[in-house]
Length: 67
Image (cartoon, rainbow, N blue to C red):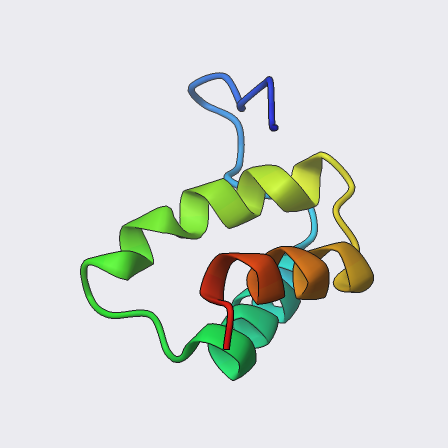
């Protein structure tokens, strides 16, 4: 569980490549984000800022989507 978020005025994410990777992994496993679902990219940005890696995102997406 992510326990901290960025204060106002700071960039959304430090590593944009990480954010793109997490969105790509989620899309491959769970399907593309809908317009409504894209609002949750902030949660993925928080995951990048907390150090989430490719393996962790793959495991989390598999658990969330249960294909």
